[in-house]
Length: 354
Image (cartoon, rainbow, N blue to C red):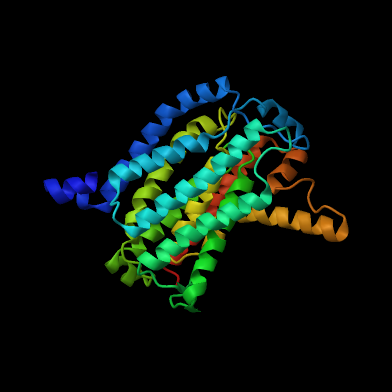
């Protein structure tokens, strides 16, 4: 709508991406803060809480009645702010909306299944969930591949030239990035605010790269891969950051609501999507280091138990390991936030070190 006002009403102020991104941030923030208490009240009335796993640390039992599906609110707020502030004829905006919508839908199905299912048996089957994620990622990847002029060259951090052209295999690689990022954030979402703040840090970092990659002069000056039109996605990034800040108001310890899979799957997939369109797929390992750490801990735990019949950690993901060791929840959360902040500051050095 704001861009329409620029095009048809001559309000030149709304041609600037940064202004529309700022408006999207505050719109999404206000919508989330306003809608969340109403949703929490409705969810409590409907007993829409996710059952706590029997083997979870004992302090999690107190969270048994905490409602879930908060992601439904902040993803909706993000999409509404995007529709109002972004250029909807931009293919990268379409891809971003598709990513949030499709992965949010998968997460919502999983959340509803957990609420309605039997204890410890709830949720979508892992195989079904994975297939749905792959189909969603393929839909986004094919859309970008066909309708955008983005190159399929592969880049690595701190190196200005591409390694090689992925050609048709680019879609498969993009699918891997989106599904991996989606599941990584989902695994991290186990403590109050643990996934929320690292997601905000990651979005700020990757949003900077998206904007600069879409800016002809700045991308040339910084030797970044130029992706025409991608800078518009800063509007969605800002909207999602705003809605996550609003969500954190209710998700900080002790949480009044959890984001659920409807939030974690969509946020993770969108972070992966922004890394793809800014050609920073491998930099995502540093940007989302906390998510990588959590995912690797699960892989090592499962691999160790299957091969050696021994566990590497007291419990996985690794934040549960520290809980069992006696760390307080707040200490774990804040320390992981610090790690996320430092890793994103390191990632930002890739702007100049090339």
